[in-house]
Length: 82
Image (cartoon, rainbow, N blue to C red; front, top):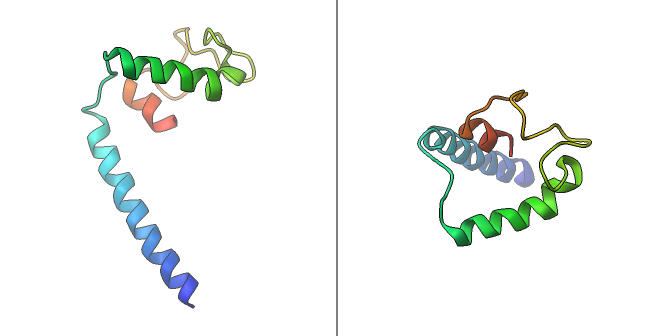
């Protein structure tokens, strides 16, 4: 019973955080700071390139460089998926 109660509290916190993020997401834009871009490149190389290739051209995962976006072409669409 204690576990279920704690899980319910955690779920409420999670849903509130997701709702806040969804609202703020539409006002976000990609960073132009070199340090942030370098960190993003490193993360992409580690976590994304195995499926999307280092150049983003697609492998197991879809091509990220063409005009055919499965989940939408906007920055907010990318944030939602990631």
